[in-house]
Length: 458
Image (cartoon, rainbow, N blue to C red):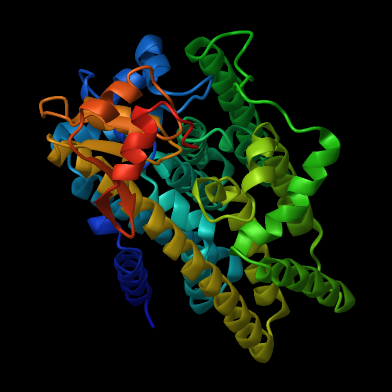
């Protein structure tokens, strides 16, 4: 089968994947409304790359995510208040990144069929589902796309004679910078990967360019965010001893279930088999181990929420996105190096079964969460004679709905997770209080009386 046929399969696979998840029909979710409302008010998308005040108003704490906000500004510029356009934007992005992953995997594994299976398994990872289906996590996919491009340019550039590498090195570090300004996992892991690749080839110009890029990003980040506090994220840090427990839970998050430990165990078994057969894995072990170690260390600032949410399939499942991609790539790389037909079939089939099971669980949980957000959000836009009881832990979602649809009348609402001074007044004056139940909004007179009387409701 020719390369163009594989690419057709990749595109078809992503489109079927989006239909399976229901992505084109989803509404806003969690952080989306607040961020989209803010992105609508800027003059142009590039504002977020150099206007510190605009960026500060758009993100939480000291996060640096100009690529995400710029992409949201594009969404609002092209099709304001349209979740459909925003999700198709994410689908198109996923197609491009999946194609890039396929090319990189095909070059690394030396087998296009195995590369295709890798992309299929990667799509089914819970972290990929979350990064794709959650618009506010779109920058994870952007970051991976730029990182893949940087590595592809590095690998291809190193094949050129020394005088002709300059343009490839520049392209590589520019793509790497794009990854860094997309998601903050990449400024640590990606420079390590590039330095190792260039260093192995004794391409010191590439090593130097990578260090210049990393230093430039550090200066840019300190300038954009706030020198002196740029590494603080506004949440407590888990003790180092407990972070070991977080790391121990990562295999579960890899596959959305206990099968993730089987994948990690299979990876270890393949490593042992490769060592026993004398297959040289010196540089691959160094490369994969160093990048993976740095990637794991990078999630330390969010150890507390991970420790609380590791067994769920909600928003935090996106966190080990890069880690999961690396582990899966390592597994398929070892299968390719061992080069045994029976082993390839067994390993690929087992991996796909495990991740497909986790994908099913993740899809069900995400669809339930998204449906609740949609029904409650649309209720305050469609109901003016009734008050709405919002049982959404992301209380800012409704504030964002009001801002994004500020030209429409919004029904009064009461937040279950954010008590306000006028809650009793709203409950007393409302003719009906609606709450979400069983996929729709229903009247709840008992809850209305409970809130109107000032009784505790949580």
